[in-house]
Length: 159
Image (cartoon, rainbow, N blue to C red; front, side, top):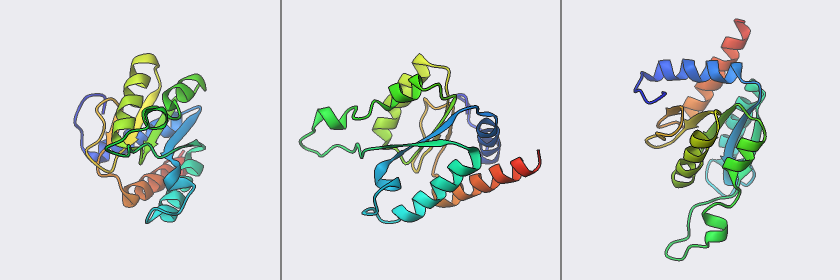
């Protein structure tokens, strides 16, 4: 969180605070999770992401799958297919949450957002997290997303 290691509970509380104080939040997630069902567990993941979006009043920006097809890479669609960093930066979002975005793509987009805007970035990563996000929560699966949604709803009820 802001270049410091903190306990998961403190990070979750800061994420809830950022989400509830956001004027125009957005969730950035791959279309393979949100729109199509060919990936195992996609419908369950989509339901949880939609619940979180509804709880915080966020838009959802689906992106295409950006995992490269090695050994041949189609640079026009696999390096920067959606220009997510530009879409995020030019739509006056103040908080952006990355969920399930391929790590290499998330790293590049987060660097661009960090260097060119003052948008608060949150990366909910299934792996080790992202250093360029203001807050990153590593090993984030469905259970952590559901817990985050419950914390958001609880905090809203206590206001």
